[in-house]
Image 1 (spheres, helix red, strand yellow):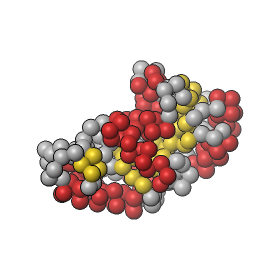
Image 2 (tube, one colour):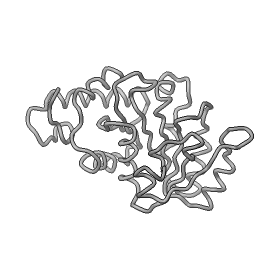
Image 3 (tube, rainbow, N blue to C red):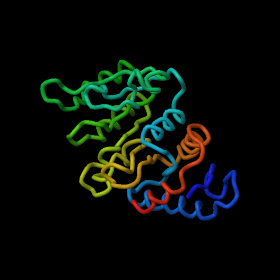
Length: 223
């Protein structure tokens, strides 16, 4: 569908979007049911743009982010110096325990208390073990930080109940639909209901123009 659909259902900038509205509403309904969450935005073109929208919604340039080092299994959009996230924000890192290659939650807590980040990121590109989202939630609350879970690589496992869901413990969840969900190439943002307006405005018009209706239709089929 080569259709401009800037905006949101029932509030578009172009006419002739009634079917796009139905598709997007259905995609949102299905992904909320799938992940048991109250808010979702299905417009992001990629996982990185989903993360970028979260930063735009919750942070100001120069705010502190605490994330897993890229070399330890993190992601470019989690604060790599060559990425927008490392250019616009002050990024601090935690690493895996060198002996066990596991997340050391007490060490992460120590770093968080010293850094006092505005946002903590969990969920990774290359970490094969389960994540204790409960512990990350405790750490984030202790330092009054937002908590983001990027589950791009395990979203399908979360949906199937084979990997812990971060949804009950985090403020925002992002993921891609083209990895373990086996859908089209695209991104999704899930969040607490109270963050809905901030996220919506950050996705559009803050971070990208119109969504791709064909990709949203494919996301609907995927969910």
